[in-house]
Length: 240
Image 1 (tube, helix red, strand yellow):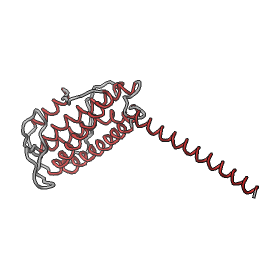
Image 2: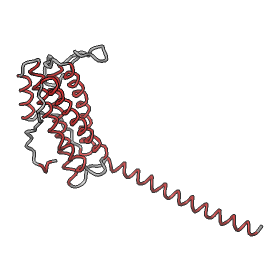
Image 3: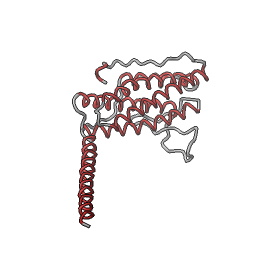
Image 4: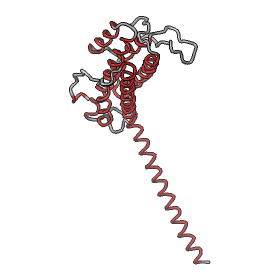
């Protein structure tokens, strides 16, 4: 009996030690998780802070210019069509711009323009929130001089087949200008800002696929199979 009692005591001590160790490990895990979550809401550190501010302002403005470009393709509607999807439905007009008839004559281009318009509105809102949460900056979208020139070109292009082709080329170029900065974001943003990295990774995927979809349309519909998107972006490499 004495031997059994001693053995039970040893088991009890080991069991209690394991429980205590488990509590310590669990406590450290919760502390690490809590610390990580708290830190993820803080601004970037060192060079990552300036990079993130530059990038978020850039992508807000970049997406903002896409709104007007897609409005010109799909047209604008002050009232939404009651159908879930209508080939003739337009987009919501950008503040500061008047109602716009659809200039694209191809339903596939109109659909792509509507989808891009909706996606980029949401991406603008998300980038604005990150910029405000981490850096206290409330940035309102602005059109750059390059964006104004691109919009003016689309505004002056006759509706129909000619507009379809000019839009596919210019919107491909527009997408390309966001690729390099967004790719840089995946390795230059703060190591704890997982949300921003996922945001940038998604932009890379969406813009790349969008470019290739438009190149395919140019080839199949207009026999323009040698088109190569280009960007006239003059940003310095160290800005992103």
